[in-house]
Length: 494
Ligand code: NDP
Image (cartoon, rainbow, N blue to C red; front, side, top):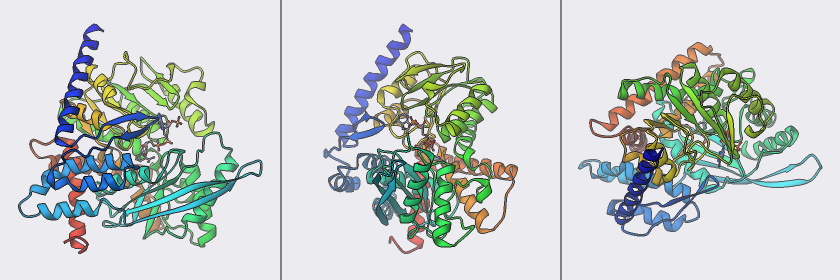
């Protein structure tokens, strides 16, 4: 225990050093946790000359820190391409082009609660890039949603979608509506009102939303129902993540979590010549992505040692059992219960805890599946001090800039969400194809396609990383290069 604490201290010192170094070269984006959101202290210190556009973005969007964080992370990852003697200048222009959404739509969403009181929420759809196909990306309903959070998610989505190999552009949307504590009827009325506004912008060939935090199959169903009533178009793939009965794809609910574990399995087998079997895997969150990440980890013989929600963390020292998993699914998908309210579980509940802050929870592999910036520099250093061997991001941007620096400075396997959680949007793309073909694909067929897709993403990452690069670098570069070359062929950047 003493030795572990010592290692933690040393790693904290390393983070401080890295942060100071990044500040000195102008690449720092100091982040602090704030209820899952990040306060990015944008710096105006010297930024490398070919990234000077970051200063313009910082002064234009100081109120969108997570968007700036996502752009900066990507900019530093692809910056080496800007030195290419033939295409360097073009790559820089293409990147700059991609930092501004093609279109941002905002609207009000009036709805009535069960007492007859009217409320008005804010809704958005960010149509970020159509270079590769229709805007594609989920809808998030959460009180913290704002235009900056959706711009960050839409920006990430462009490159993730490119990695799937499908003709999908990037977008994201949502509302600052909090589904927690709302009745089923209130949620349905909100979804219907949201779609009444959104329906004039979506179309199978233009913009195809799906779910995200706070938007699962049920909410997608209500929105799709309203779309059908308003449009008189039936069977179009205008929303994905639908239930099977109304045109959804087999395995879509499982896709992000299963795809994440398929990717982790490939990387562990390829890079570590090992397996996930018997390994201690910490999962955060207990929503869609976390639930099916746990399922596939258990299927592969791994020990799921944690799950969490925004109130606390359930720890399973001996691994989550099948009974535990079934109980969690019932509680989350049917009863809408908090983890703290669950009884008869083999795990121990830690109120206020997170898998990334519990000092004694030993972890071989980390699967952050809750939200952005959930692992900060200290959380990352704690994981390293415990000997974590790999971090696979189920959530989008779950690690702060300082946390990423800690992982980069260590020899662990680190795969960003753009690649690791691409299975969700990948199968959404297949749901669009299934709907367009007025057909139905069997579960086994879809599972084969998901495995092939994740293997394809892995190979692209590996190839783009080259001999010396990390999988993280490979992931960012491969996604960017695809979109950049499409922009050239379309004549949009020259
Ligand atoms: P869900 O709404 O189903 O679940 C989200 C989970 O994360 C809940 O357990 C929630 O807890 C927890 N959570 C949310 N905010 C916080 C916070 N600030 N601190 C601690 N826990 C928090 O969402 P999904 O599972 O669909 O999405 C999870 C992540 O995966 C998101 O980053 C999303 O963008 C990403 N993702 C999702 C895909 C999908 O197909 N659904 C595809 C690709 C990425 P609580 O109930 O207490 O809020």
